[in-house]
Length: 145
Image (cartoon, rainbow, N blue to C red):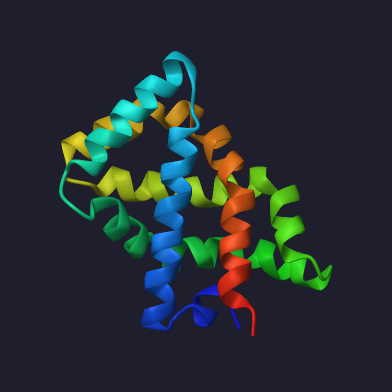
């Protein structure tokens, strides 16, 4: 059973989305310096597109994200520590996730979102890598029993 299979319950998915939004909010809020100010401004712009935009985007990306992370998670499950394994392989996980968002942004008709994403794409990998441990805990929380 893949990650997406384990998270198909609509009630569970809604909670996963909410936890992912919270994780992103916390990651952005923790950013400091000039780069952090720019990221906070860009994230604020994206959040201002419409209420619930970030949650809606996450909801749409989750199935592909879980499919992309599933092989890494499965390797980790074989070690009996998928959270630790995904965390140790955060660079690989970030590449898998960014491949999905890059493709999605390329197809986007929303110039505001595309512009904000493109401004921060070069530094995005390290930001995604920082979020992987939190994402791994979210996945673990919703895939247990």
